[in-house]
Image (cartoon, rainbow, N blue to C red; front, side, top):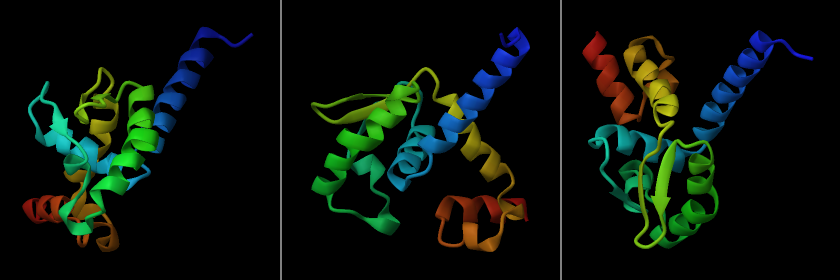
Length: 131
């Protein structure tokens, strides 16, 4: 039987795994960043908030992907809460678990390899601010 310490370590590892899995697709990353930029408690309209200007997708296709894949994945762990009609998203009770990943990246943007910063407006701005 695993000890209490082993159990807590296992839970922590799973929390990190879920946070990183949640951020493996651009629409989910875009939602997290948009929510970080919005005041807490604000609902954002979708698919607009998940459709970055540097890689616009067809809104109807994105809507389907959001409803069937991206939003359920983010909501499953409490990172976001969403409504279908109208399609909106807001921070969930565990939002800070994905938010901290972006905050850490921005805090160290000048140390990231250039290929991960170039063409990412937010990271480029953070890197310039750290120079």
